[in-house]
Length: 196
Image (cartoon, rainbow, N blue to C red; front, side, top):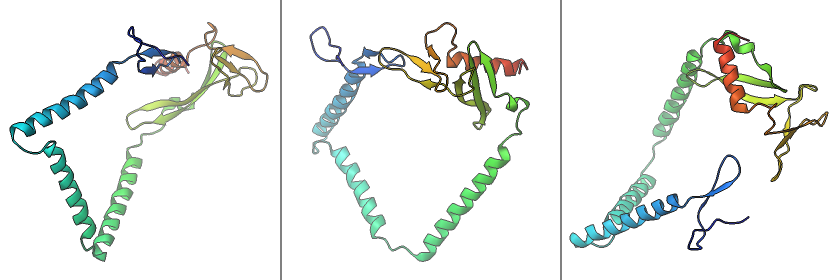
């Protein structure tokens, strides 16, 4: 793998994009180092002005955390405290589960709409409640001949999808093959227009 370099010849930070190509982008690296350096410098200046040791705020905060941990670990724990905490936890979990079941709405009319042909492929999916509305989940293309899920057999050079039974191959950039986001939009549109 080749690394991108800046005009001065230094390697840059690489970010992987959805299309599997790499783009150099060193802005995040500069921002991270700048914020750390600025924090150390400002804390040092503050400590110098107040004539306290360097990084006193960090040291005092870590001492407070350490003393709290030691105090908790050294305290006596009574059995009834443990029983109360476990009981309280169980009550909260059981009531939350009951509340979650109560807010699950009825299954919509379109819940049986779980497959359709778009261009060359048969697409299948499930409906899942996400707490606010019904969403499409497990959306996958299937071979229109064999009714079996297509497998992604892409490599570095070729992006293709293959039927494991009849061995038909489809390239991802084929005009007769629809993108998963387009299919998702079409499904939601069909549901909105009652075309299912």
